[in-house]
Image (cartoon, rainbow over all chains, first blue to last red):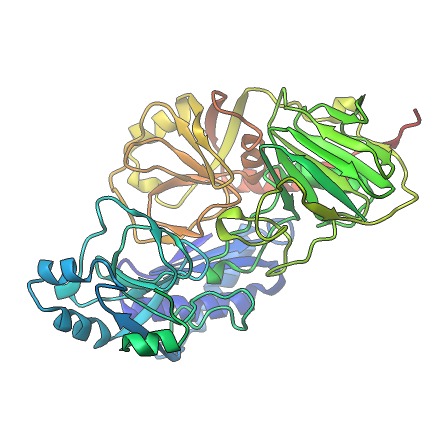
Length: 215
Length: 312
Protein backbone atom coordinates (compact mmCIF):
# COMPACT_ATOMS: atom_id res chain seq x y z
CA UNK A 1 0.00 0.00 0.00
CA UNK A 2 1.37 3.42 -0.87
CA UNK A 3 0.42 6.61 0.88
CA UNK A 4 0.80 9.96 -0.87
CA UNK A 5 1.23 12.97 1.39
CA UNK A 6 1.81 15.66 -1.19
CA UNK A 7 2.64 16.22 -4.81
CA UNK A 8 5.90 18.08 -4.68
CA UNK A 9 9.21 18.10 -2.92
CA UNK A 10 9.10 20.36 0.11
CA UNK A 11 10.36 20.23 3.68
CA UNK A 12 6.73 20.34 4.89
CA UNK A 13 5.66 17.34 2.84
CA UNK A 14 8.80 15.48 3.85
CA UNK A 15 8.06 16.22 7.52
CA UNK A 16 4.56 14.78 7.00
CA UNK A 17 6.04 11.62 5.48
CA UNK A 18 8.33 11.33 8.52
CA UNK A 19 5.50 11.73 11.00
CA UNK A 20 3.31 9.27 9.10
CA UNK A 21 6.10 6.67 8.95
CA UNK A 22 6.50 6.85 12.71
CA UNK A 23 2.75 6.52 13.39
CA UNK A 24 2.21 3.74 10.86
CA UNK A 25 5.12 1.77 12.25
CA UNK A 26 3.54 1.84 15.71
CA UNK A 27 0.02 1.16 14.48
CA UNK A 28 0.83 -1.87 12.33
CA UNK A 29 3.43 -3.33 14.69
CA UNK A 30 3.93 -7.04 13.91
CA UNK A 31 1.93 -6.96 10.67
CA UNK A 32 4.45 -4.57 9.14
CA UNK A 33 7.23 -6.02 6.96
CA UNK A 34 8.94 -2.85 5.74
CA UNK A 35 8.46 0.87 5.13
CA UNK A 36 9.92 3.01 2.37
CA UNK A 37 9.65 6.73 3.05
CA UNK A 38 10.43 8.94 0.05
CA UNK A 39 9.93 12.54 -1.11
CA UNK A 40 6.17 12.70 -0.84
CA UNK A 41 5.10 9.11 -0.29
CA UNK A 42 5.31 6.24 2.13
CA UNK A 43 5.28 2.66 0.85
CA UNK A 44 3.79 0.34 3.45
CA UNK A 45 4.61 -3.35 3.02
CA UNK A 46 2.44 -5.52 5.27
CA UNK A 47 2.09 -9.24 5.75
CA UNK A 48 -1.05 -10.28 3.86
CA UNK A 49 -1.25 -13.55 5.78
CA UNK A 50 -1.63 -11.89 9.19
CA UNK A 51 -3.75 -8.91 8.20
CA UNK A 52 -5.58 -7.56 5.15
CA UNK A 53 -5.81 -4.32 3.23
CA UNK A 54 -9.09 -3.22 4.79
CA UNK A 55 -7.69 -3.49 8.29
CA UNK A 56 -4.41 -1.82 7.27
CA UNK A 57 -6.31 0.99 5.57
CA UNK A 58 -8.33 1.59 8.72
CA UNK A 59 -5.26 1.49 10.97
CA UNK A 60 -3.36 3.87 8.70
CA UNK A 61 -6.28 6.29 8.59
CA UNK A 62 -6.57 6.27 12.36
CA UNK A 63 -2.81 6.66 12.77
CA UNK A 64 -2.78 9.67 10.45
CA UNK A 65 -5.58 11.31 12.43
CA UNK A 66 -3.39 11.30 15.51
CA UNK A 67 -0.73 13.45 13.85
CA UNK A 68 -1.11 16.89 15.38
CA UNK A 69 -1.10 19.79 12.93
CA UNK A 70 2.07 21.24 14.39
CA UNK A 71 3.77 17.94 15.01
CA UNK A 72 7.29 17.99 13.71
CA UNK A 73 9.79 15.24 14.22
CA UNK A 74 12.94 17.25 13.98
CA UNK A 75 15.84 15.33 12.57
CA UNK A 76 19.38 16.00 13.72
CA UNK A 77 21.85 18.22 11.90
CA UNK A 78 24.82 16.29 10.53
CA UNK A 79 27.98 18.03 9.31
CA UNK A 80 29.90 16.30 6.52
CA UNK A 81 33.42 17.45 5.58
CA UNK A 82 34.07 17.92 1.85
CA UNK A 83 37.28 18.50 -0.04
CA UNK A 84 36.07 20.54 -3.02
CA UNK A 85 38.52 20.67 -5.93
CA UNK A 86 38.87 19.68 -9.55
CA UNK A 87 41.18 16.93 -8.32
CA UNK A 88 38.47 15.40 -6.12
CA UNK A 89 35.49 16.54 -8.19
CA UNK A 90 36.05 16.15 -11.91
CA UNK A 91 33.02 18.19 -12.94
CA UNK A 92 33.60 21.16 -10.62
CA UNK A 93 35.18 23.39 -13.25
CA UNK A 94 32.62 22.53 -15.90
CA UNK A 95 29.80 23.17 -13.47
CA UNK A 96 31.21 26.57 -12.50
CA UNK A 97 31.58 27.48 -16.17
CA UNK A 98 28.02 26.42 -16.89
CA UNK A 99 26.77 28.53 -14.00
CA UNK A 100 28.97 31.47 -15.13
CA UNK A 101 30.57 31.85 -11.74
CA UNK A 102 33.87 31.13 -10.07
CA UNK A 103 34.68 27.77 -8.51
CA UNK A 104 34.87 29.52 -5.13
CA UNK A 105 31.28 30.76 -5.56
CA UNK A 106 30.04 27.27 -6.41
CA UNK A 107 31.70 25.92 -3.25
CA UNK A 108 30.23 28.75 -1.20
CA UNK A 109 26.73 28.13 -2.54
CA UNK A 110 26.93 24.35 -2.10
CA UNK A 111 28.31 24.52 1.44
CA UNK A 112 26.24 27.55 2.37
CA UNK A 113 22.90 25.85 2.96
CA UNK A 114 21.48 22.99 4.94
CA UNK A 115 19.96 20.12 3.00
CA UNK A 116 17.20 17.81 4.02
CA UNK A 117 17.51 14.02 3.59
CA UNK A 118 14.44 13.36 1.46
CA UNK A 119 14.96 9.72 0.67
CA UNK A 120 17.45 6.89 0.86
CA UNK A 121 17.68 4.40 -1.96
CA UNK A 122 19.27 3.62 -5.34
CA UNK A 123 22.07 1.86 -3.45
CA UNK A 124 22.66 1.08 0.24
CA UNK A 125 23.25 4.35 2.04
CA UNK A 126 22.57 6.64 -0.93
CA UNK A 127 20.83 9.69 0.57
CA UNK A 128 19.01 12.12 -1.70
CA UNK A 129 19.59 15.64 -0.32
CA UNK A 130 17.73 18.74 -1.36
CA UNK A 131 17.41 21.30 -2.48
CA UNK A 132 20.46 22.73 -4.17
CA UNK A 133 20.51 26.46 -4.99
CA UNK A 134 19.04 26.89 -8.49
CA UNK A 135 22.17 28.70 -9.68
CA UNK A 136 24.32 25.57 -9.29
CA UNK A 137 21.71 23.01 -10.31
CA UNK A 138 22.95 20.91 -13.23
CA UNK A 139 21.43 18.11 -15.33
CA UNK A 140 22.83 14.59 -15.19
CA UNK A 141 25.73 13.78 -17.50
CA UNK A 142 24.60 12.57 -20.93
CA UNK A 143 26.88 9.54 -20.54
CA UNK A 144 27.01 8.21 -17.00
CA UNK A 145 30.44 7.28 -15.61
CA UNK A 146 31.18 3.59 -15.23
CA UNK A 147 32.88 4.20 -11.94
CA UNK A 148 32.21 6.97 -9.44
CA UNK A 149 34.49 6.76 -6.37
CA UNK A 150 33.23 6.23 -2.86
CA UNK A 151 32.65 9.53 -1.09
CA UNK A 152 32.12 11.52 -4.29
CA UNK A 153 29.94 14.58 -3.62
CA UNK A 154 27.70 15.24 -6.58
CA UNK A 155 24.84 17.33 -7.95
CA UNK A 156 21.98 16.30 -10.23
CA UNK A 157 19.29 18.90 -10.93
CA UNK A 158 18.47 20.36 -7.52
CA UNK A 159 19.59 17.27 -5.63
CA UNK A 160 22.95 16.53 -4.09
CA UNK A 161 24.41 13.35 -2.59
CA UNK A 162 27.52 11.58 -1.36
CA UNK A 163 28.17 8.27 -3.14
CA UNK A 164 28.30 5.60 -0.40
CA UNK A 165 30.31 3.12 -2.48
CA UNK A 166 32.02 2.82 -5.83
CA UNK A 167 29.24 2.61 -8.40
CA UNK A 168 28.25 3.79 -11.86
CA UNK A 169 26.66 7.21 -11.80
CA UNK A 170 25.62 10.17 -13.91
CA UNK A 171 25.74 12.99 -11.36
CA UNK A 172 28.15 15.96 -11.57
CA UNK A 173 31.10 15.39 -9.23
CA UNK A 174 32.26 18.45 -7.28
CA UNK A 175 34.24 17.09 -4.34
CA UNK A 176 34.89 14.21 -2.03
CA UNK A 177 33.81 13.41 1.53
CA UNK A 178 36.21 11.35 3.69
CA UNK A 179 33.42 10.12 5.95
CA UNK A 180 31.76 6.84 5.00
CA UNK A 181 28.04 7.13 4.27
CA UNK A 182 27.44 3.42 4.62
CA UNK A 183 29.51 1.07 6.71
CA UNK A 184 28.00 -2.35 7.40
CA UNK A 185 30.36 -2.83 10.36
CA UNK A 186 29.49 0.45 12.06
CA UNK A 187 26.57 1.30 14.35
CA UNK A 188 24.66 3.11 13.06
CA UNK A 189 25.53 2.02 9.54
CA UNK A 190 24.69 5.48 8.20
CA UNK A 191 25.49 8.92 9.67
CA UNK A 192 22.12 10.25 8.43
CA UNK A 193 18.52 9.11 8.17
CA UNK A 194 15.49 10.46 6.31
CA UNK A 195 14.41 13.79 7.80
CA UNK A 196 17.88 14.82 9.03
CA UNK A 197 19.58 18.03 7.90
CA UNK A 198 23.01 17.86 6.29
CA UNK A 199 25.55 20.67 6.15
CA UNK A 200 28.72 20.41 4.07
CA UNK A 201 31.92 21.88 5.53
CA UNK A 202 34.74 22.68 3.09
CA UNK A 203 38.07 21.21 4.14
CA UNK A 204 41.59 21.33 2.74
CA UNK A 205 43.40 18.57 0.91
CA UNK A 206 45.58 17.95 3.99
CA UNK A 207 42.58 17.66 6.31
CA UNK A 208 40.86 15.34 3.80
CA UNK A 209 43.87 12.98 3.85
CA UNK A 210 44.11 13.28 7.64
CA UNK A 211 40.46 12.17 7.95
CA UNK A 212 41.23 9.06 5.97
CA UNK A 213 40.20 10.32 2.54
CA UNK A 214 41.77 8.79 -0.53
CA UNK A 215 42.34 10.38 -3.92
CA UNK B 1 32.15 -29.68 7.71
CA UNK B 2 31.28 -28.22 4.37
CA UNK B 3 30.60 -28.63 0.70
CA UNK B 4 33.51 -27.56 -1.50
CA UNK B 5 32.72 -25.75 -4.72
CA UNK B 6 34.36 -27.42 -7.73
CA UNK B 7 32.26 -25.63 -10.37
CA UNK B 8 30.05 -22.72 -9.28
CA UNK B 9 27.79 -22.78 -12.36
CA UNK B 10 26.54 -19.62 -14.04
CA UNK B 11 25.05 -17.97 -10.99
CA UNK B 12 24.81 -19.73 -7.63
CA UNK B 13 23.87 -17.69 -4.60
CA UNK B 14 23.32 -18.50 -0.94
CA UNK B 15 19.85 -17.34 0.04
CA UNK B 16 17.54 -17.40 3.04
CA UNK B 17 14.01 -15.92 2.87
CA UNK B 18 15.40 -12.42 2.36
CA UNK B 19 16.39 -9.25 4.16
CA UNK B 20 13.44 -7.36 5.60
CA UNK B 21 13.08 -4.12 7.54
CA UNK B 22 16.20 -2.55 5.95
CA UNK B 23 14.61 -0.51 3.17
CA UNK B 24 15.13 2.67 5.22
CA UNK B 25 18.88 2.45 4.58
CA UNK B 26 18.36 1.46 0.97
CA UNK B 27 18.93 -2.30 1.25
CA UNK B 28 16.84 -4.47 -1.02
CA UNK B 29 15.32 -7.80 0.06
CA UNK B 30 17.19 -10.37 -2.03
CA UNK B 31 16.12 -13.91 -1.14
CA UNK B 32 14.92 -16.79 -3.33
CA UNK B 33 13.48 -15.78 -6.69
CA UNK B 34 11.12 -18.76 -6.47
CA UNK B 35 10.03 -18.63 -2.85
CA UNK B 36 7.70 -21.61 -3.26
CA UNK B 37 10.44 -23.98 -4.44
CA UNK B 38 12.83 -22.68 -1.77
CA UNK B 39 10.30 -23.24 1.03
CA UNK B 40 9.48 -26.74 -0.16
CA UNK B 41 13.18 -27.56 -0.17
CA UNK B 42 13.45 -26.68 3.53
CA UNK B 43 10.20 -28.47 4.35
CA UNK B 44 11.25 -31.67 2.63
CA UNK B 45 14.51 -31.56 4.60
CA UNK B 46 12.50 -31.01 7.81
CA UNK B 47 14.47 -27.79 8.33
CA UNK B 48 13.34 -24.72 10.20
CA UNK B 49 11.96 -21.95 7.96
CA UNK B 50 14.54 -19.47 6.72
CA UNK B 51 17.42 -22.00 6.58
CA UNK B 52 20.05 -20.92 4.07
CA UNK B 53 19.95 -22.84 0.77
CA UNK B 54 21.78 -22.47 -2.52
CA UNK B 55 19.90 -20.87 -5.40
CA UNK B 56 21.36 -22.28 -8.61
CA UNK B 57 20.36 -20.32 -11.71
CA UNK B 58 20.57 -22.16 -15.07
CA UNK B 59 22.79 -24.96 -13.69
CA UNK B 60 26.38 -26.09 -14.08
CA UNK B 61 27.11 -26.61 -10.38
CA UNK B 62 29.48 -29.21 -9.00
CA UNK B 63 30.14 -29.69 -5.30
CA UNK B 64 32.11 -32.15 -3.22
CA UNK B 65 30.61 -33.18 0.10
CA UNK B 66 33.08 -33.05 2.99
CA UNK B 67 30.53 -34.28 5.49
CA UNK B 68 27.80 -36.91 5.88
CA UNK B 69 24.46 -35.18 5.63
CA UNK B 70 21.26 -34.95 3.57
CA UNK B 71 20.44 -32.80 0.56
CA UNK B 72 17.35 -31.98 -1.45
CA UNK B 73 16.95 -30.15 -4.75
CA UNK B 74 13.70 -28.43 -5.76
CA UNK B 75 12.71 -26.05 -8.54
CA UNK B 76 13.75 -26.08 -12.21
CA UNK B 77 14.24 -29.35 -14.06
CA UNK B 78 18.00 -29.53 -13.57
CA UNK B 79 19.39 -33.06 -13.65
CA UNK B 80 20.79 -33.94 -10.22
CA UNK B 81 23.66 -36.41 -10.17
CA UNK B 82 25.33 -37.85 -7.11
CA UNK B 83 28.58 -39.62 -8.11
CA UNK B 84 27.39 -39.58 -11.75
CA UNK B 85 24.13 -41.35 -10.91
CA UNK B 86 20.95 -39.42 -11.67
CA UNK B 87 18.72 -38.83 -8.64
CA UNK B 88 15.19 -37.48 -8.23
CA UNK B 89 14.44 -33.83 -7.61
CA UNK B 90 11.94 -32.87 -4.87
CA UNK B 91 13.28 -35.66 -2.69
CA UNK B 92 15.73 -35.93 0.22
CA UNK B 93 18.94 -37.87 -0.45
CA UNK B 94 21.70 -38.97 1.87
CA UNK B 95 25.21 -37.90 0.88
CA UNK B 96 28.52 -39.05 2.34
CA UNK B 97 31.83 -37.25 2.63
CA UNK B 98 33.61 -37.52 -0.72
CA UNK B 99 30.41 -37.65 -2.80
CA UNK B 100 30.30 -35.43 -5.87
CA UNK B 101 27.00 -33.58 -6.31
CA UNK B 102 26.27 -32.17 -9.73
CA UNK B 103 23.42 -30.03 -11.08
CA UNK B 104 23.42 -29.93 -14.86
CA UNK B 105 21.72 -27.36 -17.06
CA UNK B 106 17.96 -26.84 -16.72
CA UNK B 107 15.58 -28.10 -19.40
CA UNK B 108 12.53 -26.33 -17.91
CA UNK B 109 12.54 -23.40 -15.50
CA UNK B 110 15.88 -21.82 -14.58
CA UNK B 111 16.27 -21.72 -10.79
CA UNK B 112 16.83 -24.60 -8.41
CA UNK B 113 17.28 -24.76 -4.68
CA UNK B 114 19.85 -27.08 -3.18
CA UNK B 115 19.33 -27.40 0.54
CA UNK B 116 21.18 -29.35 3.23
CA UNK B 117 19.92 -30.69 6.54
CA UNK B 118 19.69 -27.69 8.91
CA UNK B 119 20.83 -25.36 6.13
CA UNK B 120 24.21 -23.91 5.24
CA UNK B 121 25.88 -22.21 8.19
CA UNK B 122 26.25 -18.66 6.89
CA UNK B 123 26.52 -15.59 9.14
CA UNK B 124 23.74 -13.03 8.84
CA UNK B 125 24.29 -9.46 7.81
CA UNK B 126 21.44 -7.07 8.49
CA UNK B 127 19.38 -9.97 9.77
CA UNK B 128 19.74 -12.24 6.75
CA UNK B 129 22.20 -14.43 4.87
CA UNK B 130 20.66 -13.51 1.49
CA UNK B 131 23.28 -12.65 -1.12
CA UNK B 132 22.77 -9.43 -3.06
CA UNK B 133 25.77 -9.14 -5.37
CA UNK B 134 24.98 -5.54 -6.36
CA UNK B 135 25.19 -4.52 -2.68
CA UNK B 136 28.11 -6.85 -1.80
CA UNK B 137 26.06 -8.11 1.13
CA UNK B 138 25.21 -11.58 2.44
CA UNK B 139 26.39 -15.06 1.45
CA UNK B 140 30.14 -15.52 1.28
CA UNK B 141 31.66 -12.00 1.08
CA UNK B 142 28.55 -10.70 -0.66
CA UNK B 143 29.36 -12.54 -3.84
CA UNK B 144 28.20 -15.46 -5.99
CA UNK B 145 29.98 -18.79 -5.56
CA UNK B 146 33.44 -19.16 -7.05
CA UNK B 147 35.58 -22.30 -7.44
CA UNK B 148 37.26 -23.26 -4.18
CA UNK B 149 34.61 -21.75 -1.90
CA UNK B 150 33.66 -23.77 1.17
CA UNK B 151 30.00 -23.85 2.11
CA UNK B 152 29.88 -24.59 5.84
CA UNK B 153 27.08 -26.92 6.91
CA UNK B 154 26.24 -29.50 9.59
CA UNK B 155 26.84 -33.20 10.04
CA UNK B 156 23.42 -34.82 10.30
CA UNK B 157 22.86 -38.56 10.63
CA UNK B 158 19.06 -38.89 10.72
CA UNK B 159 16.44 -37.48 8.41
CA UNK B 160 13.28 -38.97 6.98
CA UNK B 161 13.65 -39.25 3.20
CA UNK B 162 10.59 -37.19 2.29
CA UNK B 163 9.50 -36.57 -1.28
CA UNK B 164 6.88 -34.44 -3.01
CA UNK B 165 4.59 -36.64 -5.14
CA UNK B 166 5.21 -36.04 -8.87
CA UNK B 167 1.65 -34.85 -9.56
CA UNK B 168 2.16 -32.01 -7.07
CA UNK B 169 5.50 -30.86 -8.44
CA UNK B 170 5.20 -27.57 -10.32
CA UNK B 171 5.55 -27.71 -14.10
CA UNK B 172 7.64 -24.93 -15.59
CA UNK B 173 6.33 -24.08 -19.03
CA UNK B 174 7.18 -21.32 -21.46
CA UNK B 175 3.99 -19.32 -21.11
CA UNK B 176 2.59 -17.65 -18.01
CA UNK B 177 -0.43 -15.68 -16.92
CA UNK B 178 0.54 -13.02 -14.40
CA UNK B 179 -2.22 -11.63 -12.22
CA UNK B 180 -1.82 -7.88 -11.63
CA UNK B 181 -3.25 -5.69 -8.91
CA UNK B 182 -3.70 -2.31 -10.66
CA UNK B 183 -2.27 0.52 -8.62
CA UNK B 184 0.41 3.15 -8.26
CA UNK B 185 0.10 5.42 -11.39
CA UNK B 186 -2.56 3.27 -13.12
CA UNK B 187 -4.64 6.40 -13.85
CA UNK B 188 -1.78 7.92 -15.83
CA UNK B 189 -2.33 5.16 -18.40
CA UNK B 190 -5.45 5.84 -20.47
CA UNK B 191 -8.06 3.16 -21.17
CA UNK B 192 -6.58 2.19 -24.51
CA UNK B 193 -3.14 1.70 -23.00
CA UNK B 194 -4.57 -0.33 -20.13
CA UNK B 195 -6.48 -2.54 -22.58
CA UNK B 196 -3.37 -2.97 -24.66
CA UNK B 197 -1.38 -3.96 -21.56
CA UNK B 198 -3.91 -6.56 -20.44
CA UNK B 199 -4.63 -7.98 -23.89
CA UNK B 200 -1.17 -8.13 -25.49
CA UNK B 201 1.37 -10.88 -25.39
CA UNK B 202 4.79 -9.96 -24.03
CA UNK B 203 8.02 -11.89 -24.37
CA UNK B 204 10.75 -12.18 -21.74
CA UNK B 205 13.76 -10.26 -23.12
CA UNK B 206 17.47 -11.00 -22.65
CA UNK B 207 17.55 -8.38 -19.95
CA UNK B 208 16.07 -10.43 -17.17
CA UNK B 209 17.91 -10.85 -13.91
CA UNK B 210 17.42 -10.85 -10.16
CA UNK B 211 16.60 -7.11 -10.21
CA UNK B 212 13.78 -7.39 -12.67
CA UNK B 213 12.42 -8.95 -15.84
CA UNK B 214 12.26 -6.65 -18.84
CA UNK B 215 9.59 -7.73 -21.31
CA UNK B 216 9.08 -6.91 -24.97
CA UNK B 217 5.81 -6.33 -26.73
CA UNK B 218 3.41 -3.69 -27.98
CA UNK B 219 4.68 -0.46 -26.31
CA UNK B 220 2.48 0.94 -23.54
CA UNK B 221 2.30 4.73 -23.43
CA UNK B 222 2.02 6.64 -20.21
CA UNK B 223 0.75 10.22 -19.93
CA UNK B 224 3.78 11.11 -17.81
CA UNK B 225 7.45 10.29 -18.23
CA UNK B 226 8.54 10.20 -14.65
CA UNK B 227 7.34 10.67 -11.12
CA UNK B 228 8.84 11.83 -7.86
CA UNK B 229 10.91 8.82 -6.76
CA UNK B 230 8.89 6.53 -4.51
CA UNK B 231 9.07 3.10 -2.87
CA UNK B 232 8.88 0.09 -5.18
CA UNK B 233 7.27 -3.10 -3.91
CA UNK B 234 8.08 -6.66 -5.03
CA UNK B 235 6.31 -7.33 -8.33
CA UNK B 236 5.80 -3.66 -9.24
CA UNK B 237 5.49 -3.17 -13.02
CA UNK B 238 7.38 -0.14 -14.29
CA UNK B 239 6.74 1.31 -17.73
CA UNK B 240 9.73 3.42 -18.83
CA UNK B 241 9.59 5.81 -21.78
CA UNK B 242 10.14 3.03 -24.35
CA UNK B 243 6.85 1.43 -23.24
CA UNK B 244 8.37 -1.98 -22.46
CA UNK B 245 7.29 -3.26 -19.02
CA UNK B 246 9.78 -4.23 -16.32
CA UNK B 247 8.54 -6.51 -13.52
CA UNK B 248 10.67 -5.73 -10.47
CA UNK B 249 11.81 -8.69 -8.42
CA UNK B 250 13.96 -9.58 -5.40
CA UNK B 251 17.04 -7.41 -6.00
CA UNK B 252 15.11 -4.33 -7.20
CA UNK B 253 16.08 -0.79 -6.22
CA UNK B 254 14.07 0.30 -3.22
CA UNK B 255 12.94 3.57 -4.81
CA UNK B 256 12.54 4.72 -8.37
CA UNK B 257 10.93 7.30 -10.60
CA UNK B 258 9.36 5.43 -13.51
CA UNK B 259 5.56 5.27 -13.66
CA UNK B 260 4.02 1.92 -12.63
CA UNK B 261 0.78 0.39 -13.90
CA UNK B 262 0.33 -2.03 -11.00
CA UNK B 263 1.96 -4.93 -9.19
CA UNK B 264 2.20 -8.59 -10.12
CA UNK B 265 0.76 -10.96 -7.54
CA UNK B 266 3.74 -12.33 -5.58
CA UNK B 267 2.82 -15.95 -6.39
CA UNK B 268 2.97 -15.18 -10.12
CA UNK B 269 6.08 -12.97 -9.89
CA UNK B 270 7.89 -15.97 -8.39
CA UNK B 271 6.74 -18.11 -11.33
CA UNK B 272 7.89 -15.44 -13.75
CA UNK B 273 11.35 -15.72 -12.15
CA UNK B 274 11.55 -19.30 -13.50
CA UNK B 275 11.09 -18.01 -17.08
CA UNK B 276 13.91 -17.61 -19.57
CA UNK B 277 14.23 -15.21 -22.54
CA UNK B 278 11.64 -15.95 -25.21
CA UNK B 279 8.94 -17.17 -22.80
CA UNK B 280 5.52 -15.59 -23.27
CA UNK B 281 3.73 -13.50 -20.64
CA UNK B 282 0.11 -12.34 -20.40
CA UNK B 283 -1.19 -9.97 -17.77
CA UNK B 284 -4.62 -10.15 -16.17
CA UNK B 285 -6.03 -7.53 -13.78
CA UNK B 286 -7.46 -8.76 -10.48
CA UNK B 287 -8.89 -6.93 -7.49
CA UNK B 288 -7.00 -6.60 -4.24
CA UNK B 289 -9.70 -8.83 -2.64
CA UNK B 290 -9.06 -11.57 -5.17
CA UNK B 291 -5.31 -11.20 -4.61
CA UNK B 292 -5.77 -11.56 -0.87
CA UNK B 293 -7.89 -14.69 -1.33
CA UNK B 294 -5.37 -16.19 -3.75
CA UNK B 295 -2.52 -15.66 -1.27
CA UNK B 296 -4.44 -17.14 1.63
CA UNK B 297 -5.57 -20.14 -0.38
CA UNK B 298 -2.07 -20.82 -1.70
CA UNK B 299 -0.70 -20.64 1.83
CA UNK B 300 -3.28 -23.06 3.14
CA UNK B 301 -2.75 -25.42 0.19
CA UNK B 302 1.01 -25.45 0.74
CA UNK B 303 0.58 -26.43 4.34
CA UNK B 304 -1.56 -29.41 3.46
CA UNK B 305 0.77 -30.84 0.83
CA UNK B 306 1.27 -34.54 1.48
CA UNK B 307 5.03 -34.99 1.84
CA UNK B 308 5.60 -38.73 1.84
CA UNK B 309 8.45 -40.94 2.81
CA UNK B 310 9.85 -42.84 -0.13
CA UNK B 311 11.76 -46.04 0.24
CA UNK B 312 14.04 -46.92 -2.61
